[in-house]
Length: 53
Image 1 (tube, rainbow, N blue to C red):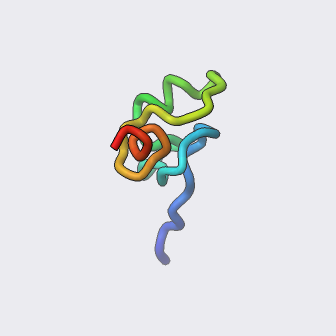
Image 2 (image 1 turned 120 degrees about the horizontal axis):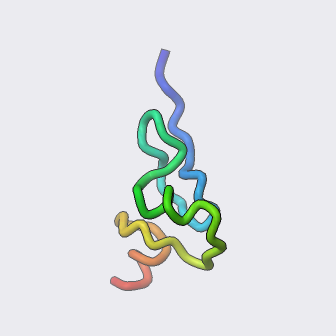
């Protein structure tokens, strides 16, 4: 049975979570209780990364 990909638990992030984690990166894991308008994970296609391009 294939494992379902889940979204990163950080509300501002659109990335898929890492296997075995609720977050896509250390940045999102550390910012879990911080309210942010955009994500700072740095993955291509995510809000802050996309707007910096």
